[in-house]
Image (cartoon, rainbow, N blue to C red; front, side):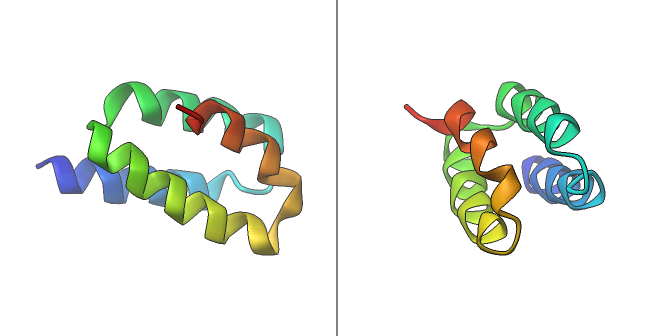
Amino acid sequence: MARAMFDYTKTILEKVSFDANLFCREVQKAISRLLPHEVQELRIWLEGKTDNNPELLGCLVYLNP
């Protein structure tokens, strides 16, 4: 079940990646819903995502420990 939430989160983030503000709000929601190890996976995924979309780099602030 938890893996389904992680996959769903990635799907939502893909769909809203056109708007950095909306993307950051969804990242914040994801952090509150995901398990700690999934948040770490999300950080890795986001770092890869920001290679192609540098405007999303600001959202990584929410994932800092």
